[in-house]
Length: 314
Image (cartoon, rainbow, N blue to C red; front, side, top):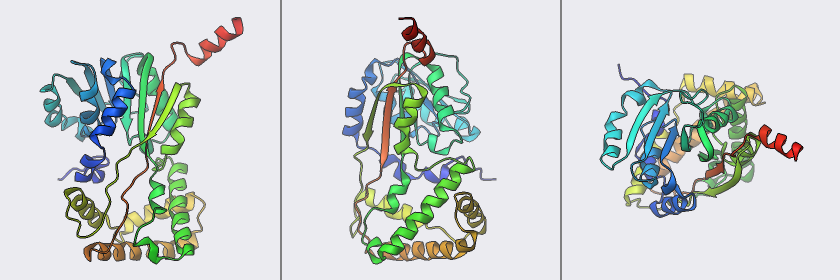
């Protein structure tokens, strides 16, 4: 039996090209990651984010990963060994982002990448991260706003009328809202994260947008372009009954008219097939940008309630 891990469909070669190294270096300097001696990567998967961020920590830092999928915990030695070769103590444990298996105030630095978009209660997950973070410690959450992709210009999108473009966005937005209503995550959470940080009591909140973009233009000869093109072909959504049923549930839960779903779904599948043909013909041109938000905050030395008590007594 070929076991598939959580989010494994997202673990293609493209994920290895999400970041520009000089941008990561800059963020590491701004956040003073070199001063962090203990770190936790929540929902670490196969360590894509851990491997990028851990080398910027203090020499000999202790790094822990946690994931709720047993497959990623079982497969962890394949990549954690390479981190030990760099002098980093990296280990992965089983655990849920909503109930982290660590004591209070265990880490100088807690981070996650594309994890909050999958959880039913992102603020609960943030409070758990805050709980295991030491006072004065740093939280960094990296989350996308995937809905932006439906509004970005491309040569293929220019074929549609403004009404068709608006209807396509409305369809995607309704599905996204339904996903959130049903507790299945929010794949466009990125822009909401700074507000959530403020609500859970983090201080010195800062936000950046990744500067990574992989433009597409024929003949798609660059290695990164080939990865994008191959990934787009693989991602073309077939008219799969199970996926269609799940999406219908999201659409209705998000306020969509059930009687309109079949027509909207059929149009979406047809457009994706046409897109695959255009990719194959080498006629698609796009900027290749994605909206990936990096949000950081500092845990107060006192809890918000304790700070309020101090302020009242002052």
